[in-house]
Amino acid sequence: MTATREGTMRSSVGNPADEKRGMNLTLRIWRQKGPSVKGRMVTYEVTDISPDMSFLEMLDVLNEQLILSGDEPVVFDHDCREGICGSCGLMINGTAHGAGVAAPGRTTTCQLHMRKFKDGDTIDVEPWRASAFPVIKDLAVNRGALDRIIQAGGYVSVPTGTAPDAHAVPVPKKDADAAFDAATCIGCGACVAACPNASSMLFTAAKVSHLGLLPQGQPERNDRVVNMVAQQDREGFGGCTNIGECSAACPKGISMENISRLNHDLLGALRAGARPKS
Image (cartoon, rainbow, N blue to C red; front, top):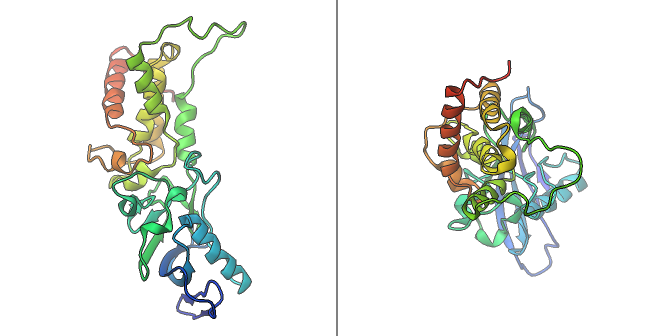
C-alpha cells in the first residue's frame, strides 16, 4: 500500500501472487475529521474484491488495510447489517443506499452487494447531505433530528392495568395494512438524502400515519401531527414539493400517500384548534 500527500492512497487487498479472483475498484470516499473541518474526497484502490461481499464488508476490508498501514480507518454508521435497524446510510454514486446501482430493486447500504458493480468501476461514497444531518466524521452523520421528531409526538397513551384481549378493539384490515406499511419505516434518512429540498416529510408522515390509522392513536391524533410537523421545521428540514425522490429511494417503499394523509390530518387538526407546543 502506498500513499501520497495529495490524498490518493493505493491499497492492495489479498496476495498479489495469487491468481485474481475478484474485482479491482477505485473508491472515492469523503473524508472529514469533524463537523467544523472542511472535508474532501480521497481516492483508494482496492483489488480482488469478491462479488459476494456486501458494500460494508468491502469497506471493512479497506479499513483493515488502512489500519495495518497506520492510517485512520473510514468512519461509517452500521449495526445489524440486515436491512432492519436503519443505522447504515451512504450516498453511493450519487444515490441514497446506492439505489441507482441496485435498480430496479430497493436496498439498504448493508444489503447492497458488490455483484452489482463491475471490475474497474469507480465508486463515489459520500455521507447523507442535509443541514439537519451534520457530519460527525467521514461518512457518519448525526441523525438525532429524526429522534426529536418522534419525541415530539410519536407515541400513544396506554392505560395501566390488565392488558386487553388482542381482539378487543376491532381494526379494519385496510387500516391495519396501511398502518403496517407505514410502520416499516426504519428511520434511515434516505428520504432526506434523496430529496433535493432535504425534506423529512416522508419520514414524519410514516410515523404520523402508522399511529393515526389505529384506534389506539386517536386520543393524541391532532396534537401528534401539529407537534411533529413543528419539530420537523425547527430541525431545519426543507419543505416537501412532491418530487417523489423520497419514496423512490426508500428501502421499505414507503408510499407518498402517507404525505397526503399527514397533510389531511394537519389541516383538520389546525381547524380543530390544535397548536404546537412552544
